[in-house]
Length: 496
Image (spheres, rainbow, N blue to C red):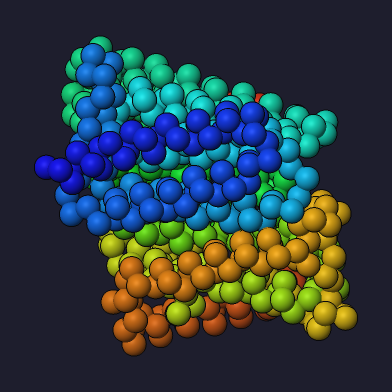
């Protein structure tokens, strides 16, 4: 009983602390970096407490308003992802000229993401997602350029439209059952489930509703892209995973969307010539992996968050974003090394956590999902061959300077970059311990066959074909129209 009370008390303090630190940064701006780093470390400690939970602990707050929190190992994986990605971004920016406003928004975003990962009711989740949307918008527009402001406003409008659908669904849920709790979905009308699912699919970057993501993530500053792709979009996927575990009858619907998302994202990523857009499209694909197997979604979300943050931070140091240019200009061995390690992990190379996560996911999916998910895994190997086979040389031949996008303070000559890479890539090695059963001869042989096949397709086909898929579906008006079509489809699927 004492341990339960201690965890409940620690949870309340942990939820409030990042917001307190964030707003206190304005009073003591010189403490912005260390205070933010302390908060990231506290989240890391708290996530370990959650991972040790054998059974879920439910907290009821403000009963008349229906605020419910659920603390378990699933939340622990997602909170750990948030802690490590935030810490890596802080290290990366340590020597930059980011002001107190930037670190305030990072802390507000960190706290809201943490809250979303322990919510078990739809109204407190709505509040957390809205705070995440505003904080993300402010970070996207931090550079104050015309392009950044337009991309940020585009994101904010799409996010608010999605949340309007979500809120209408939450109201219908409350009318039918008198509760906002996730458990209330058992009595929810089909239109409520369809509306809330559409909002979460859009926020989470799932299937065609998530095609706002590539432009947004690729145009943001490098550390912001790392946070958005590494952890923020998972706040839309997490509630879907939680509901799928509560109600197995939802799993076929979400599983189908997971397979479709994995294939859609990787299809675009294979032919994308821009490095950051390719990473953003692949975030869409990997979110499909998270959604396709809810029972193991936490582990996959952790490995993807570490990999994608490392890749975005590394890609920000490339001398150019165009792969055609990069194939003619050798980069430095150290930079190529970190990019290659992260790319090999997400491609499923043994000895890195991506191998265990992908093996566990493919073993967990339903039989009808196997072909699609294996094709997506092959597409992943093809896509990331673009990074693995970049030309590289010694420090005199390669590029050791920051890209035009990044100031010199965040170039790879800066210790903060290497500390961030050490944290993320070290995490990929240590996370192997979560699923050592993956290291069977059959699993490792399959992984190596997938890698070999993917690299062969890259060299023989993808590298030779100057094909670029149309970006029509990413246009603003088409994105809004797609939401309406998805709502109709979801309503039909829920009824079926």
